[in-house]
Amino acid sequence: MTQKYLAQIYVTLRASVLDPAGTAVQSGLQHMGYDNVERVRIGKYVELTLTAAGESEAREQLDRVCDQLLANPVIENYRFDLTEIPVAVETAAA
Image (cartoon, rainbow, N blue to C red; front, side, top):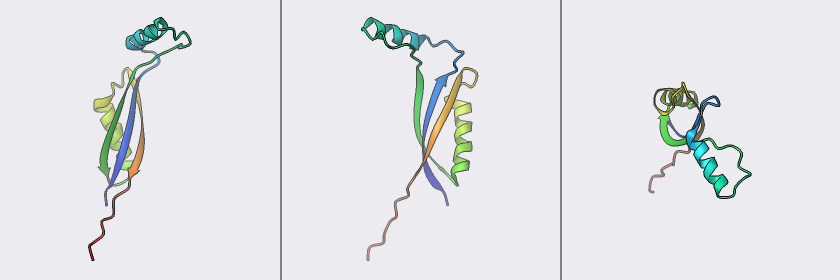
């Protein structure tokens, strides 16, 4: 039996990689008077639904998807949260 999962994927630049977009946002915030903002890093958030035989299979598939498409492993890190989606039980009309 297969199960549906909701994956929430977070892709961020590695700490050693410069983030010009984050620097621009931080500068803009400081110009707006938000001097207490010390560091801004920009990333990506991806949400997808997938079907798999089990959680371990879903996690393996997500690792491949992130490595091959969603993240550039040279400059980015990723992590994901995986939540099982309950299957609606259909009842037959009596």
